[in-house]
Length: 492
Image (cartoon, rainbow, N blue to C red; front, side):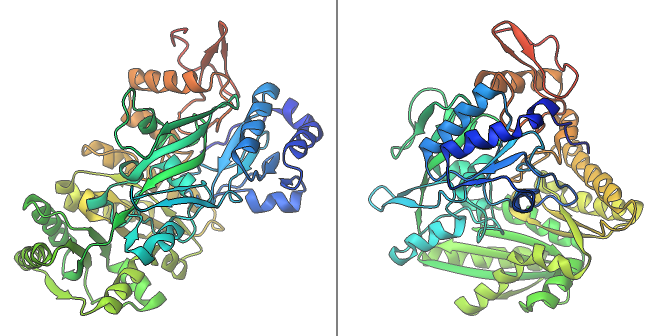
C-alpha cells in the first residue's frame, strides 16, 4: 500500500499555514514534532505519517473558517474523530492539515418527546447512551470501540455494532447533520422530523469518509430499552455447524437483537484476557433476543431448537450480570489479540449468510498459505466478517503478508456476492481493491459526486478511490499527486 507523495510547495509554506490556523483557533494548533506524533496514525496497523499541522476547533464557526482558508490556500484537509478508524480513513498527510474534532464534545439537547439527541461530533458513542439511560433510552449502534469512537466518525464510516442486525447501522439511526462544505459554507441536512422530502443528501453524507465535507452537529434517534432481553450461548464442535445455525435462524424469520460469532482461537484469547466463561468449543454464538415477554420467550425457544438441530449446545445467561459478562468478552475480543502477537489487522467485509461455512473454510486455507494465524470474530446475523490477522510488524515481510492475506479475504467476500466493507469504510486499506468490486462506470459516477462537492480534491485526498480524484473546475482538470485518472470524465 503506497501513501500519496506530499506536495513540497505546500510543505515549504508550513510557517504561513500554521500562522493562519493560529489566527482562527489561537489555543488549538499543534505544530511541534513531538505534539504531532500523537496524531500520526489511526487504528490501521503499520502506517504512520505526521501531518503538516493539526488544528483542534471548538465550534462550527472555527471549522468553517479552517475549511474556507484551506480551500483558498489549496491545502489538503484530513478530518479526524477519535482516531479509531480501522481502514486508515483518518491517516494524516505530510502536506495536509489534520482537523481533530475531539474538543467538540457537548450534548446540545436531549428531546425525549421526539426521541432524539442533538450533539457535537466529538461525543463518544457510549456517552450518548449514558446521557439517556436514566430515562430508559439508549443509542442502538454499538461498535466494540464505543467507549472511544465518536459520533462524527460513526457518521463518516456508517458504523454498526453488535446490535445492528435488528436496529441498523448509523444511517438507520441518524436524523440530521450540520455539515461544512469544502468552501466553508454550513448547511443543514435532515432534522428531528423523519423522512424529509427531496434528494436523500443525508444518506449520501453518511459513510462518505470525509470526502465531501465535515460534520459539526448530529441529530440521532434514541430508542426505548426493551422490556425483556435474554441472552443465549451456543457452542459448536465445528465452524460449519455454527454457520448453518446462523442461516437457519434467519431463514426462520427470527431477527435477534444481536448474533455474534467467535472461533476457537478467539475464544481462547478472550478467556485468557477477561475470563467471560466461554465453553470449550470450535465456535460459539452469543445471541440476544429482546422485546415483550411473549415475543422473547417464543424467539428463545425457536433459536434453541435451531442450535440443537445444528448439533450445538445451548445455555442461557441466568441474570443481567451473567449477560454483561458474556458481552464483555465479545467486546474485548480485539484487545485480547494483544496476547497473541504485537500487531493485528482487523478486516471488514460482508457476505451473504449462506456463504459463511465456505468462506470461513477458505479463510483457514489462506491462513496456511500466508503463514499467519487468524481469529474470526464477527456479526454473524448480517454476515459482516471481522477476521483478525495476527502478525509482528518487526519481522521482515510480516506486514506485507498480512496485507496480502487481508486482500485475499476481501476479494473472496466480493466473489461470493458480498462487499468490501460492512462498517469500517474503505480508507486507504481497501482503496486499491475498489476495482475488484466496481467497474469504470461505477467509479466514474462516484467521482462525479466527489467532484460536485470538492472540485479541487482537497478533502481527505488519497482515500477510497484507487487513483486520486480527477475533478473539473472552471474548465480545468485538477489532479493532485497522481497521473490523470478517468481522463474521459465529463465536464460539468
